[in-house]
Image (cartoon, rainbow, N blue to C red; front, side, top):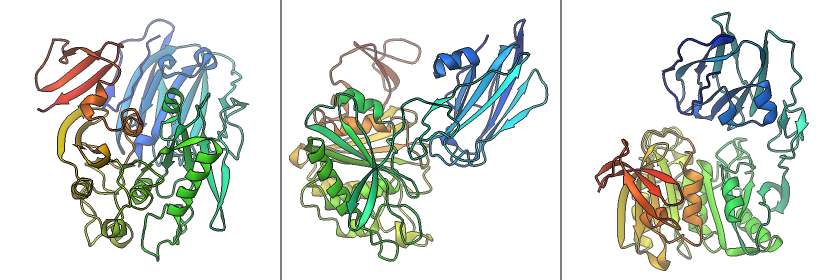
Length: 461
């Protein structure tokens, strides 16, 4: 059997003639809005019951942009049971996306995930139907409830509650096995209209480095949408989220014996706004922040006067039309609610000035997007400021974000520069170009480390 694993969107992928006892299969994927949230995989019965893994799939696809069409052609055995697993990382379905599957050039079937995080579709070829046991969380109260699951796999994440300002506030925790005493605490804040329980890919890092993750839910604003009040205008919201998040952090520090000097906040979109607000208004509790596709609110921009200075980090996409990298124009319909701050470069000029940063450096690294990174160093308290400009990215959470944010937060390397960070605890044994030749030139290169790891880079200076 020929297999295909597709991780990045391409116009066309195809295989040659299928072997005897195989059928040809074509899968056309059309992404809708928020196309990067859409993923699917196809498995045969045996590999699925042995354990879902992209490496064992017949074909796997994850979108990278909206409204694109991709055709995949491959071969499958002409006898057996098959399952298509669909997922949406945000949990609201594929927003108009679908896949069309044709086997042996016969009539096609169209599959759509209209809502939720998970979907499953099965089909048989020249055999009786199989009995599928679908693993997942079967508790409807859990944030990762999987309505299609038939066997609970113990993965359910249920909420905790914290009373604050006459409200019962909801939050989720990810607690790794063998959490050490005085461990760090990382808050992950959802975007506008989202919910808690979104850990943004930090789970494996928490297991490896021993820190707790807290993901709370924002209350509804005056328009009826879950949000974080990052010092927004009063007619939009008067919720005291600075007080809530600070009090919850202090409670968790005491309850789980966490280190108060290692509590951090990061967030996506509106959660990024909120993290900036914590840097301005609660630096005594949150010792570093990172914002992904957020920015400062207008009121924070005008009023920010932190009692102490902490490291700050920002990831912005050049194609983001939800939170523009250049700031909101004054004639934008939502300027009063969301605008008021300038472009992200001016924001970092402001922070580098108040933090007394002496030096800055810029480089480009090829993550899932080519990314320009500016590091501001030699600041007060040995702080570092870091700005990531992701070329070609829209309003999304890039794959590299969790690891880069943790490296920025991590107390052992919190003050390391970009170059120092890349070389932490490992040595470069050689640098090669894309053809495998030794290279010390500008442009694309690959660093090979003594632990077997590699990092693709684009060197501009």
